[in-house]
Amino acid sequence: MPNIKAAVKWVRQSEKRTVRNLDTKTRLKTLFKKAKAAKDAAVTSSVEAQFDKAASKGIIHPNKAARKKSRLARALAK
Image (cartoon, rainbow, N blue to C red; front, side):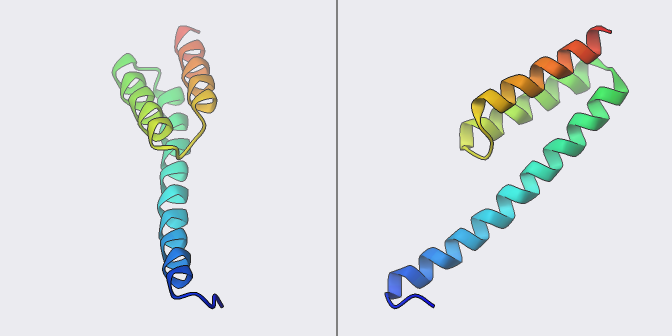
């Protein structure tokens, strides 16, 4: 348990952020799988936007977002 009063708040904030980020990452994985299976351009573009949004907020690394978008585009082209 933290000794500093502000550190207690940091712990609370970290827990909230961890839960929110984990939820977003899980949702992205599901969206990626559905878009890959659907092979629809409209669905693909919305999923790519979600990856960009997560990367801009720092939830996932920008390179990971680019890699996922690239793989999604490759799957759509096949």
